[in-house]
Length: 295
Image 1 (cartoon, helix red, strand yellow):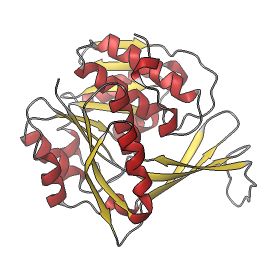
Image 2 (image 1 turned 30 degrees about the horizontal axis):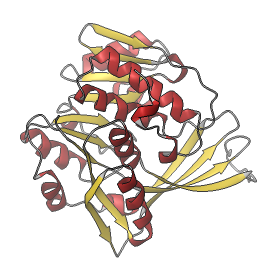
Image 3 (image 1 turned 180 degrees about the vertical axis):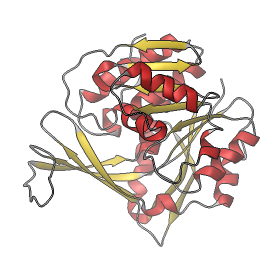
Image 4 (image 1 turned 60 degrees about the vertical axis):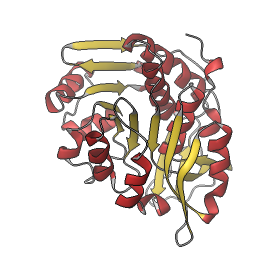
């Protein structure tokens, strides 16, 4: 089986339990605070590895983030490509979780934005044709990483979050799999509607060379490839925390493809894993092991 390099963010998550999200001008007393490991990159590496993939993580932390390495290592992720900076803090996130289990997130990039081209080349050195690169938009040097990986024949999986000016159209056209939610899809395409088929068509028209996986919250997910549409319903669970749902879905979807499952089977397994994750509290701690996710 080919291997996966997840080149991505490593964060410390500060998660506040609130009755509702803070509004403009409002001071709100939280009902609790928990500190977790996080970052889309870390979460996706954990999900990939727990799903059964040989997973390598590349990125950067500050001295304050050494405990993130322990979490990755305990999930059997190779951490040899993670650099430690003595000059900048580890990235972090301020996360509000409301009583419905929804969240909103504010990021501080920190060490995640200290990646260099030399670091990227070193991280990619042992990967080649047929291996997978999983990336998000929470690190700098993203365009260079994707272009370098493409030249080496890697399959590129991008979670375009957050959507901002760093996501150039030139880079997006190199992506093999776009895994994104409705908000990200609308931001990329300019299509503003709740019609899933309209959004799917807009993605296909703008990125005809990419296969897209659109996550739709409680409406499930949809795979888009040309005229092909494969829909997957959710597996209902009591919602406690949705923070790592998308990262869990992505990790299990990619791992399932690498393990030889077809698209429908990969969507189904990814949906089951994400449903388990939202029934638990925290980001990385909520991600299930493969043995917990029945086919």
